[in-house]
Image (tube, rainbow, N blue to C red):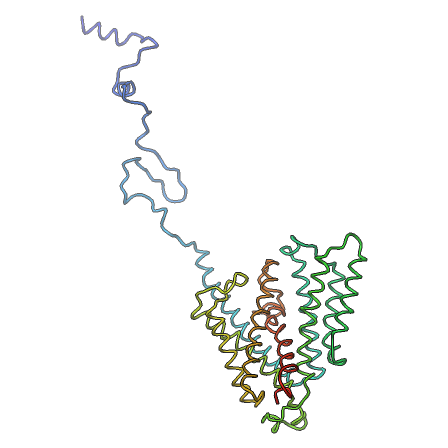
Length: 385
């Protein structure tokens, strides 16, 4: 009977507040149990690999998926050789076009005269166009108003005419002041409100891209005194000018250009090998170690070539020419780097593959021609002969 009553009581419907007796209900209603039980087994959704059963809290470490291991995607593996090939192609273009430019510049310097002046004028026009494009870039225009495009074009033409004016008139001071007056008038009469930033960027463009390069024409063609001690002139063909072709301007131009190339080359190699201390924030890749090595290479090149050409006679004059060539090279490079840094670009142009634009190649030469010419014309007695 007791068994029958127990069976009847268990089979009778339970009140709503009662819970069927089981081990799970006992655990759930235990006073020390506060969280709901989590399932011991769960199925991971298939995301590529086969379906995996992961036991939470019971999986062995050897069976856990290794998600933190570095993995290289197939497309990244394909990019590695392409990047190395691209760097090799850039280096090859840089070497090939660099040699071509060097041979061409050497021929133009030896030719002199209207050939040299015309080549300088063409380079100046291209460099001026690159400069005014940098001025109009987004990085610079955020803080200033660039000059109108017609003013930029007029400035580029005036800059290109300055070397020719120096060649046939002997000086450039009048043309610079006249051009500055014309630009100031054009900017003041433009529609809208003129800005001082427009005037300053245009006037600096005339100075930087036109006035400074014109000194190379004065250096090469203006110093027409014969370099009498130069042995190369004695064997120079008469059809190409003979002894009179080797002037102080030719020898000074060759030494100055060679010193600049040596400064850049030794600074690059020295910085790669020993560079540790940054030179300036304007150009983070330049180091003090590379600069010092470039300075020594520039001085040595200037002294050695002065012995080869027997000009200048004084050793101190050769050292002074090397020092000024180095200073003009470094500060010309930093000036152009400052402009590109504000513009937010790496190169001033894409005219020369592997090198960039004209300004990227000629930045070290802009100040140097003026420094070398004034040293020889002002401080060397008898032009160093």
